[in-house]
Length: 313
Image (cartoon, rainbow, N blue to C red; front, side, top):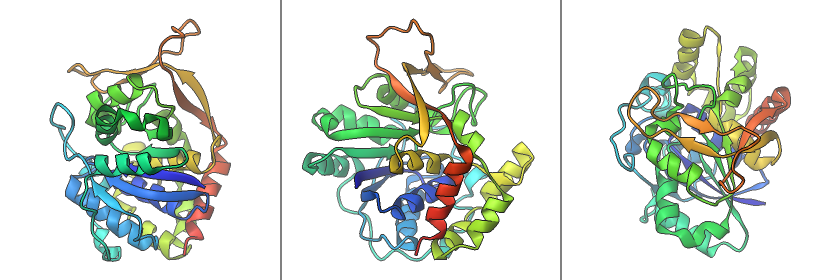
């Protein structure tokens, strides 16, 4: 089993990622930590607790993390995409949590779990990278305990929040730059270039709605998110960004990757939050590289995600 910590800002696509991990016997879900992002920290934390309850995993500890970026305030949230509560206004359809958050904060919980680990732990940051930057800055001793960071974020050819920047990276560019170019931790970056190619259609969503209790619960959360894609991309479907990253955690190698140095634009202006990958063959070999997910068998991946979630409970 792969020991896993999910760092998240639920978020509709985060909900699918949590459900996918919870339904996978290959995963030992050690904790879920929350961060600001799609909505504020109070909502993301409440959503994480409710989603674990839906998935029958209320024993998994949940810890609150950062409620703002490292340096500069975040200009806005993604309520227009995910709804005011982060879950299309439907968080109340999820079961009430039977447990609250743990007393310690996200960074302290991650550090404690990593220090106690007897085998490498994967961390899946699927929101802004603030908690991860703080963890690596304040607890550098845990780095050898991290098997991989599998990060959903960035866009090599452009963004989904601005012309240049993807939402998670744009929400805290300084944290993203620290994690992606300033740390020697094995890292996979799953950018929107690939996740958009893995969009699900109406037929996939109909099959989801016909699944078990977890699948039905997730289906109820999709309407605002689905409407966003209807309006902005002219198609009936949605993109499961974060679940694509979790598929790589569960089935390593389901995403094909290429090693590149990565930097994040932290200046102010139209390119703030841009993810810059140096794909030249002559890139400096002394520079830290990130494994960037560039391709996958889309049909196989989406069938895998749907099969796991529809069979849950």
